[in-house]
Picture 1 (cartoon, rainbow over the protein chains, first blue to last red):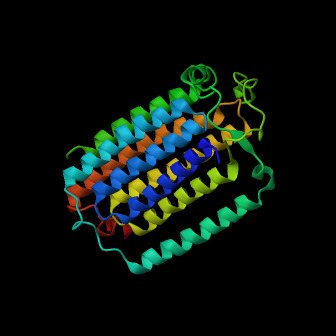
Picture 2: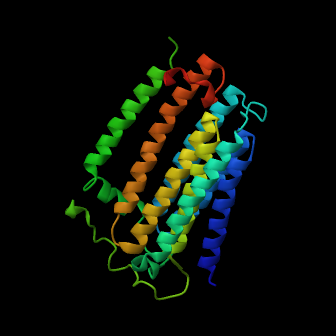
Picture 3: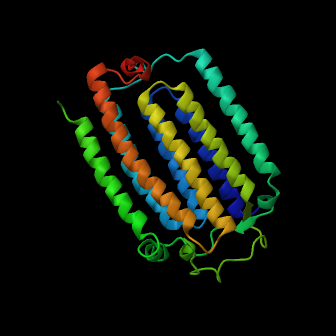
Length: 167
Length: 123
C-alpha cells in the first residue's frame, strides 16, 4: 500500500467519522466544528484528485466564510444543548431506514457498473487544476455562467437584506 | 458546448491504471455516497434549522466530490467537472446567505428555530 493510498484511506475515514459526529453531537457549536473538519478532509481529497485551486476555494469559502456565518448565527441565538429540540424516535427510525435502503441501492449499483470499475487514475500528478488553466477556461468558455453567477450573488444579497431587515 | 473541451494537459496526463499510488474510482464513489446519506439522515432527523442547513451543505459537498472524481478519472484533460463544482460552491454560498436571513427572521418572530414550531404556512 503506497503513501497515496494511505492518505486516501485516512482522509476518507476522517471525513466519514467527522460527518457522523456532526449529527451525533448535541451542541450546535460542536456540530459546526466537526463540519469544518469534514471540509478539511474533502479539501485533501481535492488535492489528491488534482484540483488544487478547488481545494483552496473550498477551504476559503466553506470553512472560512460559510461556517463562520453559521457560528456567528448560533452564538447570536445562544443555542446550546438545552435548546436542541427533542427528536422523535419514529422520525429517526424512518430516516435511518430510508437512508440505509438508498445507500445500499447506490452502493450495489456502483459495484455493478462494470465500465467504471476498472478505472484507476494516478493521484496527485498533473497541473490541470491550477489557477492559470482554470482562469483561461473560466474567462473564455465559461464566461456566461460566470456573469450569471455574479447576477445570482447580487440577487441573493438583495434578498438576504430584504428578508433580514426589520419591518 | 463542444468547444469546452480543453487540451491543455491531455498530453501530460498519465495512462490509466499503470503505477502504484492509485485509487480506484468506486472507492471515491463509496465515500461520496456515504457522505450523501449521512447528510440525508441528518436532514430527516434534526429539527433544528441550522443543523438541517449543515446537512444540506454535507450533501452538496458529497456531490462535489463526485464531480471532481469523474472529471479526474474519465476526462483527465478537461475542466468541466471542476467548473461544475465551483458553481455549486457559488450557489451554496448564496443559498447559505439567504437561508440564514430566513433563520434570523424566524428566530425574531418565533423566538426559536425549531421547524416544528413554524407551521403557519401549513394550513
